[in-house]
Length: 620
Ligand code: SER
Image (cartoon, rainbow, N blue to C red; front, side, top):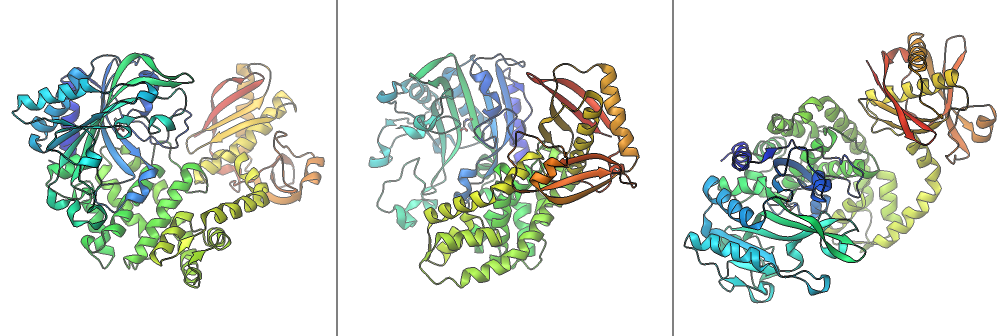
């Protein structure tokens, strides 16, 4: 079955059971979150799992793009990716285990056609320390389900030590607890979670562990990583919340199911690697075409490239897309791309610019399901090229430098040098070191980085201030528009107006400023008009580096909440005769002349917090 058909079958199956389809959420979280990426279908549903009413009701179904950076090291085992799709269904305080468990089974067996004898189950063993009991109820329901089909369904425990023991249903502890942030002890307060029940598929002994020496002294069981069993889905019974007093019951019991689309497709398509399914094959073929290897000749490098370029394409092309940078989500994009480029060299990819060719295949596969990556493709290609160009220049030099190191251990200083000078992420340094039988002094690396951070704090103070989501052309236009907006506000409302915050992306600007009351309609149109006048005048934007004290004395606009370094950049917007309209301390970037901006339209003026107003505006 093609992935598309599996997606559709899943949605239909649950629609028939009164579920409402909810569209997938952006990869970059909508709400503030301690996690940088949406890592599961349930992520955007947290408020509803905690008890809020969902506008679409109590039964929901969808598919969701997810990114898990912690799986980055696992790539290369034919079944892990950082970017994957999750099929999900939820009960928000509605049905529970009795319905969910038979549905999961029926879906896999009757709709997808999996062999029920090859399905194995795990359930929660319970944990006295946190006061949560063994999930015998789930085990009993599973038993009934198997027995109805005439399949033996023995329950066993301690499989880690004792092996399969001819069991069908297995008890585990931590492996059978799920929350967005992992097992009970790593959950932050107010995080929901619960015991879960995982479904595994037996790929056959020949695929598994007996061949692999690292497991030869351990018994095989469903949760061992030898490769024989693969997890294809997981029902979490979300009914607890972590509080200062331990785990407390949520007002309602929820079900949160997630199934891995790539893995289900792999089994359905009779493959042993998810990279050979229709969700990956065109990407793999493309890499074969531009390199001098076949996939099976270097599984790891192929999978790293296929996965990483796919993930970078999705993150940059997300509804809330981000570009490569040294911070937050942008750092992951950079890391994914740099690692791909290095593996590209291992595969002898000749072309200097090839990432885009791989990304094009990704967009082709997914454009109907995730139209945003097609819509944002120009931005994606622009960012990929920029990153590839910059890193290409450094990679060669960096590798030469690397090869000069003969010590068994790469010192913190050396690692930090490779990072600062050639842009090698620590993970890349570690990987290269490992290939050459070397170790990296990580502690030393972090110490060096700390020292460096202190030195360059000046720089980053500037970078943060502008609040830009990326440095694409459109975003930069909005940035310049923000300066004009502040100048107009100060002219019309008075010089007490200062900037309180700014958040800019390719689609709009959001600007916070100090002012005590709501602006009148008239004031809003005056501000708008003023900005558009300045745009029409085709003012010129120039920058200069200045001594901070001098700059402040000369009356440039600054945000006083910020600590400035001793020297700063000052951006001036003026006409040809030298009349100044705006002059601000800012780290840029900006457009060269204001006529590029088009027309500013203020969409909204509202309160942001006490004494602070917020304007949202777009350029047309
Ligand atoms: N949230 C659960 C998981 O990620 C099930 O959807 O496994």
